[in-house]
Length: 138
Image (cartoon, rainbow, N blue to C red; front, side, top):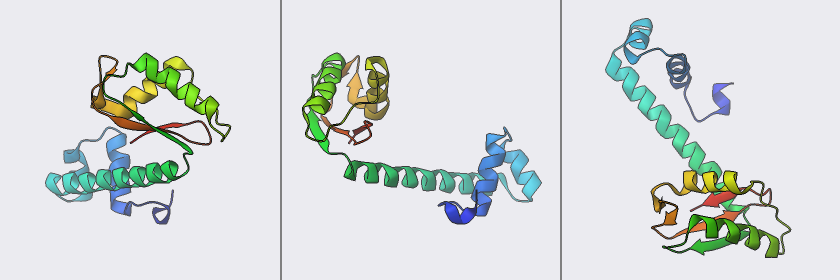
């Protein structure tokens, strides 16, 4: 992939490739003739750039989600799954959730993170359903 097609610099991409191949920061520093601290700083910045790009994509997906609703503290995960299917079926947008119940529960837990504990919502959040049936959390 070309550098111009990403939010990363050529050096960041090089270091991430080497790290992905299992090289330590020390090994990369020796190979590139720099310090471990420099490699660490470049890698950290690259990962921040990646996170920003992911957040940008998430924002764009949110713009295209016709269904949004709030999930209240105390809601059980099983009940939330049922609510998601009901909201998708009831909406005018003709949206079909692309996950079965188990995959949907995993997706919600992944996206909601610490806002769900022991299959119960502990912090309010919103769920969105996109036109292609993906589920988002904000």
